Length: 266
Length: 267
View 1 (cartoon, one colour):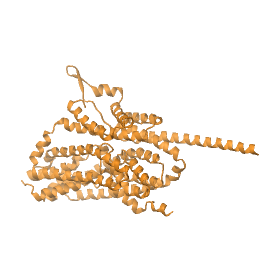
View 2 (cartoon, helix red, strand yellow):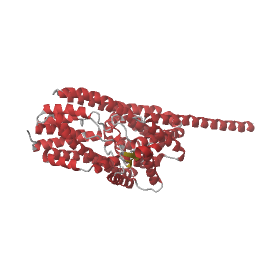
View 3 (cartoon, rainbow over the protein chains, first blue to last red):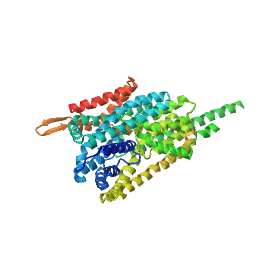
């Protein structure tokens, strides 16, 4: 039985900020449990527990990927808490993976909340783009990164040092409809982004292609959009050669006319 | 002449762009996903390309702020391509069309390689080391991902070279190509609506003892799959275009609506 010291709590928070940045940006994959658990083990002075927890949690999280803007249960909180609970209670990391899950869900919902609320930054970004204000535009991107990092730091400090038990109660008492609501909002919000794209690009003559793309993706039920893009490419090429032919014909016709004028001139 | 050569990307520039592509998700959000970070990653180069022309820079920034969601490791390919088109002053609709058309397939390819192939293999091997208490596990894992990170330079350079080579063809037929690129882009947006927007009714109507009809599965899906996402997106499009309602309002309404409807058990 161990308890977490203040210094360890702070070190864990600092580590969480760094790997939190990395998870947000998907840079060096430091956020994977195998790395997070090992670092946690190092900070707690129990590398072996960290390694074993890392191996177990990594395997458990292999299928949970943040692909296509979805957000899986948070691997960082899962990694840290699996190791921390194993260290403090002396339990087998196999069992503590399950105990760490509520914390992992907590962070998942916090990130989902940011995904939704950060939509508001796009209005500001649009404004800065209007004025070609590159400095403010850069600042905006840094503010969002820093908010994420700080959140990781605070939550990990709270979960590991200040109040493990109350945090768990909080997570478990969050109503299902609220969690579900966040997920639903995440599923619908891209519609606004696509509406904006269509506002810029859609003209009446392009409506057929919107319908075809939509139907193709709906009925193919394929894991990525490559087939749809190829269908689009087929139409684009077909249109391209047609238009080019037409342009050449008109040009040839014009040339002919020009030639006739010339003949008459003689 | 000197101005021309100033705006070309050197090898060092391409490396910088490749490393800066790590900011892709800096301001990730559900409305436009990676748009803010995408623009920020390329910003120094966009600024250099349009240096004296504030209006051109503003237009480029606005175009690049459109919805984008692709694979972070390979995004450099698309960034290199877009930068090469920007520095050759390619027609804006060509850039827009290609950007929209390519991010989805690139995401598909990148995710398939890095998340669904490389990660399970590397994680599997490294975890087996770690489970034996061997530090080699996490160290090997880290080394592999440093290499993958460095591969961003390769993608970025390839995208840039492709764009530079294609530029003369693009230039000669720019109007026709702009139209073709838009056709491609619009087709993909149709596909994006079907695969990224999710609206599922949770309502179930009891018809007989122990028998219920799911409004989504037995009714809506029988009309046309994804009809609700399509309807909602077109609704957003209509409100943005015809009524000029701001995106922020639409986001707030959607967000609050989703939570209320979840509470009522409708979604």
